[in-house]
Amino acid sequence: MLEIFTITGPIYLCIAAGFASVRWGLFSAADVRVLGRFVIQIALP
Image 1 (cartoon, rainbow, N blue to C red):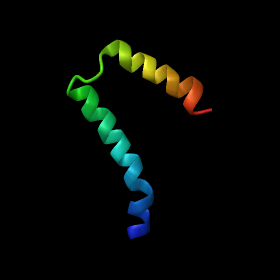
Image 2: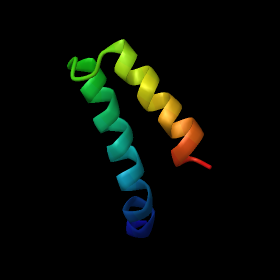
Image 3: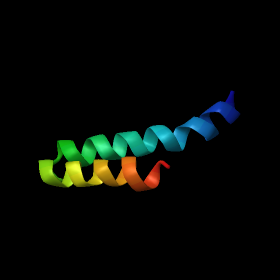
Image 4: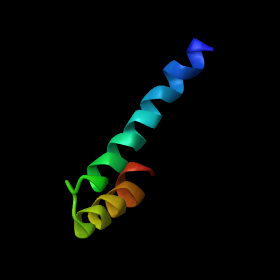
């Protein structure tokens, strides 16, 4: 059971950090668009 948490934990922490940063206003809507394009076009492939 602990192995599952060690594998999936960092993924959920990244998602939570991204959600919190947008929620607290660290990124504007334009920043989010640029980061989204970066992820789709460069980071994922």
